[in-house]
Length: 207
Image (cartoon, rainbow, N blue to C red):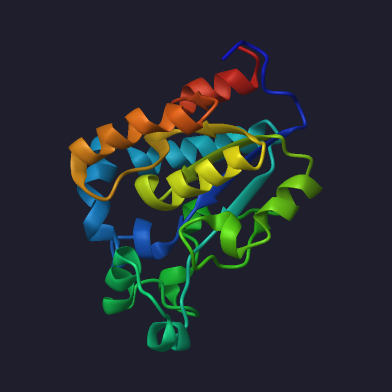
């Protein structure tokens, strides 16, 4: 990617599932990812990413997952990931678990999308309309899970014509280092840039 490709006023960052269920030790999902969070530095990197884009005036969009009791009882054709979530009542709507983590939550003027229920955030929210309303052409995405919601949403963004940046050190996979490495190897196939947090922030500055 050439220097200066990120146009001021045309950038946006989506953070997916930065909720207590995933990032607080009391969340049901946290034990699944804790070792990888520690190895990669995911939580600290997300905090630095969020602070950095805020300093640069980049719009931030937040998307959390949640399911109602009706969803758990009546969802048809469960995929493997949905079955795992439903069997363990992950992301229960209206609970502390689906609240954004205090250190990774929307600030004044930032957009909290309606909860997503599919792996691709575009599929069940107004993300596309929000990005276009805010003039976003250069779309960056981070959060969880890197090999599921982040990857699926990034692929969809590419198909919709956005310039896509994936940020591997601000996410994690669901199955340890080998799965993470395979995920990172895939990212450039559907991303226009795959950058670490600090590289992305420097790129926003034109460096």
